Image (cartoon, rainbow, N blue to C red; front, side, top):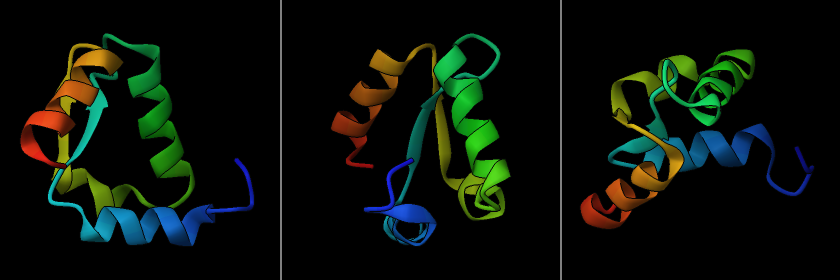
Length: 69
């Protein structure tokens, strides 16, 4: 990850978000990678109650467009 944003920027974005959309970890590699990243960076507890899951990354993007994540 680039040093331009970093963990604090992601934590701030998660805190401000109503929902965070990711692909279902059991179906999509990007979803598993998102969960692994959140856990590895210590952001899981901040994000877990805001997560909404989609079948794939394209659907996750659509959820954000529809629900204004």
